Length: 423
Image (tube, rainbow, N blue to C red):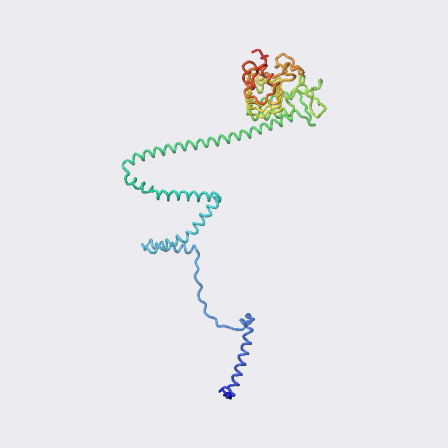
């Protein structure tokens, strides 16, 4: 069966034109294909007709939108157009709400810590929960019924009572504010006085050091220098409180200025002990500063006087209650009618020698530091209640020489110990 030629096959011109058309299409495709791979060159080579551009969309800032909302709201209010007023108000409210919320959030973050914010939220939820529970318990209905049955003609007298209570509350608040101001002023004054006192004590320390120490750092005191040092000490001890007194006594004692020192018989200068310090001489030595009666009647309650040398001082009626006197030297000290309540006397030197042979100091008696005669502290009529950490020798001496009135205050009692004072 033979194939019938088509019209295109029969017409040679059509075939030629088709071939030419196909050739042109292939050329066109080859020309377009590079434009896909190289858009920049094609874009520059092909010229498109310029279309008229449409105007951009109008963009308004947030401030402009708020001003427009205010303008609309103002028009509504001015011309009494409700719809304009409502729309303007709603627009202004919505536009400003976010800024207000951001400001409130910033203030909360600035002034409240995360824990405080959590506590505030918890407190608000707590109040809200109470309000809801009161609603379901019928509290608000009871309040409404009470208000409906309330006699408003009696409200005037209640108002007067409330006004009177308000005035009383204001007076109480004023008194509280005045008291708070007084407390603050008092605390500031006390703090300032402490600073001033410490500065005075520091100046005293420096002055005493300059007065008694030479350029080579040695103790070089003369009678006139000792007299001036004692005068300065008497002046400052009478002007400071108990804390200041304790500081001064610790300084003088640790500086060996209260200890009787062995001196050269001709020059009167302190002598070295051969072990890096000054030699003591309890019998014939001379102190740089003699306390004498400077501390008589002083208040040293609750102070730290450990290792302080208070020997030979006249401390009549001095208050040593709750004072730490560990290892302090009270030999030949006069503690007549002194208060030693709850004082710590662990290792305190009350006498020299043996407790059985030691006796208190007298005006004319010469101390014997071997037997202890006339080397003991005078404790007649002293209050020894609750004295702490007494050893047996100390208890024996106190019971023997404190007198009948004070024996009953010594912890542990004085049974079997004779009253050598005789009164």
